[in-house]
Structure formats: C-alpha cells, structure tokens
Amino acid sequence: MGVLLTAAAIVASTGFGIWSEHRWPRSAAEAARRGLQLILYVILPPVYFLNLAAAHIDLDEGAGILLALLTNAATATLVWFVASRFLNLRRAEVGAVIVATMVVNTAFLGFPLTIALLGRDHLSTAVLYDALVSGPLLLLGAFAVGAAFGTKAGETVNERVVTFFTRNPPLYAAILGLLAPSSLAPATLVDIAQVAVIGLLPIGFFAVGATLAEDAEEGTLPIPPPLTRTVLLSLVARLILAPALLTALAAPLIDLPSTYRLLIAMPTGLSAMVVSHAYGLDNRTVAEITAWSTAIVVAVALISLPF
Image 1 (cartoon, rainbow, N blue to C red):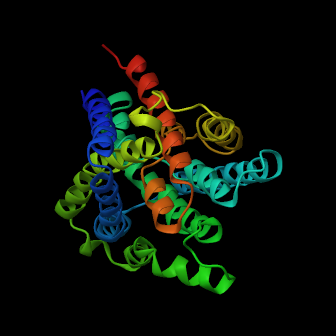
Image 2 (image 1 turned 180 degrees about the vertical axis):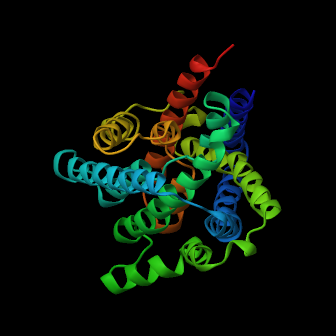
C-alpha cells in the first residue's frame, strides 16, 4: 500500500506542477522556488541533525557504508568524464547530470519501498544508510558540484567556495548531529523528522512538474520527457552501474545488507532540484532525469510487490 500511495502522490504532484505552470506561469515558478528553499533552509537541517544524532552503527554496516560512498563517488566521476569529454555539454549541464547521478532518493521513496519489499525491521538500516551515505553525497558532494559548475555560484574560485558554505545549511546541521549525544534526538522527534521527509514529496515533485512544463512550446509538454543522451547517461549510471559496482566491491569483503542493495538502486532524489535551483545548474536536465528514474524505479517496484 505504501508503494501505491507513493506512486499516486508522485503522479498527482507532478501533474499539478505541470498544470499550474500552464495556468499561472509566474506564480507556479515562484511557488516551486519557494518550496525548494523551504526544503533547503527549514526542513532538511533538523532531519539530518536528528537522524545522525540518533544513529548507531556496527562494523559490518560501516564497511557497507564506506563501499557505498566509494561506489557513488566513482560513478559520479565517470559521469563527469563522459559528459564533459564525449557529450561536450555546457558547464551547467555537466553539473546537473553529476548532481542527478549523485543525489539518491533513499528517504521518502526508499523508506516506503524498504518496508513494502523487505519488511519494517529493515527500516532502521535504511535510515542509517540515508543519513551516512546519501547525506554526505548531498551535503558535501552535490553542493560542491553545484558551487563548481553553477551559473549562480560566482565567477572566481573564492566566490564559489563562499557560495558552497553560505548556501549549505544542512551541512552544519549534519556536523552538529554527528557531535551531539543521542539524548538530543529522542525517538519521538526522530519519528517526526522521518514523517517530514515523506512530506517533501509533493513539494519536490510539484517543482519537477513546473520545471518540465516551463520550457514547453505552445502549452504542450512531451510526456514522457525527451530521453536524451544526457538523461540516458545518468539513468545507466544511477540505476545500473552503481548497483553493479557496489555488489562487485562488496562480494569478496562483506555480506552486503539487502537494504543497501535496494537503496543504491533508488532514483535521483528531489534534493537534486534544490541544489540545481540554489546554484544555477540546468534545472530542466535535473527534472527530466528525476522524472525518468523515478518512473522506472516505481514501475519495477510495483511489479515486484507481493500480492
């Protein structure tokens, strides 16, 4: 049921974003921008603080987390090389495809899928993975890429470094969460934070829909979005290469948790849209990759559901 409700919410939110952009172009664009700012400055900081303050990790899980970080970093590096050297994309497009590959939806899509496909007892492992793998990839990796490749990050290296630190409030919340004792993250607040993450879905996919519709000609939008070489590059890297690489690296070393195998194959996360808007990457590229990767993963999940 959780997967079905998630799929319905994704379709409804994206469709409402598309319709709103056609009906009220300026208002929809402003609403999308403010919604993403709300996510960045208000919702994400306490989510990261509480989850990291409450996290507990053993040796086996730690090894899996390190391998997952290495896998995602290697995948993003390969995407950068192909996008810049072979596809000759604009700087903002290169940054967009890297961020879309690096930022993974392990929270409000990964959590429901973990419960539906693996069972509720695997949820704590999923939260740990989200906090210690997806968190650093977003806060350090994606924000750094945005600062390096974005059109709103400044012209000089110093300006881009300043932009990275001034537009990255979740980073400071994550650092505080790692340093804070678990007593500052009571179970009730952690539960509330997890619910808040699930509530990001309508805001984020409204922004995806509005962005996809923004450049459509004569009020029409191709559905599905164009499957360009740029989109294909990210889809292959995100949904095929990353899971295969993590499995290969872990095989001789550890018994990789099934939760990790599931979450490494999640689609592009909505936080990629947050980074793209904040730093001036190619928003449409990120929106197209997010839409395609989410549709593929949700479709596979629905087919895999036990009935």
